[in-house]
Structure formats: structure tokens, C-alpha cells
Image (tube, rainbow, N blue to C red; front, side, top):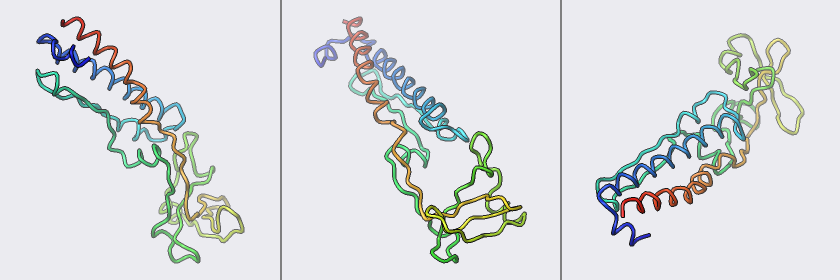
Length: 184
């Protein structure tokens, strides 16, 4: 492959850049679908919209490259997994602080929270102690639970951004090889 690169014609850099751009767009499309159709089910679309591609380089094939990336703060926790812990909210409650986890009654069919905690408390919601293994408190409004207050939530790795990009490498190399063969 290295010998092909050295002997490639004047259009080889652009042909390689085109192959990289095509592969990056394929990864971007696959990642966007993963966040919409599973294993992540998009509620807002923020993560799906955050995937971007960049190609770079000049007329020298050695300078050509590209990347697909996201600037979403949610991406790392979904890629690698981890535990989200409460920091300050409800710190005055015994055992606090706690995270707000919306109940099913406080979510739309798409899983989007209907009322924020501020909206709930402004509407008259209040905190009730409960005896549950999952939660010690819940937020009630009109006798309906709106939030469970929990210490932490563990997210399993499920985005598979790295493996999706790595799976594209053989196709990319094959396309580059074909493009270089045309230039020889």
C-alpha cells in the first residue's frame, strides 16, 4: 500500500480525501441511527445531531485525513458507561443530595419529562419519604409520583461509537486501494 501511495498520480490525494469523506459520512449516518432507533432511543435528538465529520489535507496524499466526532456531553457516558451521582440537589434531605428521576406519569410517550422539578414544586408538589430499595423519597403532585429521588444512576456502555468507526476501516482501505489503482 505504501508503494502505491508513493507512485500515485496527481489526483490521488483528492481521491483519498473523497474516500475518507464517504466513510466518515457512513459512520455519522450509522451513529445517528443508533441514537434514534436503538439501543439508545432519542428523546430530544441532541446526541444524534451532535455527530460531525471533518476531512483535511492538501494535494499531498500524506497530509490527507479525517475524523468523525461529537461534542455532546452525553456521548462519553453512553460510549463507556459509568455512574452519575447527585451533587447538590436536595442536599438538605436526610442522606442527600439526590438526583431527580422522572416517573412514568411524568414522561411523554417519547420519554420526555413533562414537568421539571421547578414547575412541579411551583404547582404544589411536595417530597414524601418512602420505604423502597431504589429510592428513599419521591415528589408527589395531586397524589401522583412525578420524581423518584435517588443517589446515583448507572449507565451501561451502549453507544458503540468507536466500534462503529473501526468497522468502517476495511471498507475505507478497499476504496482507497481502488482509487489509487486508478491513479497508477
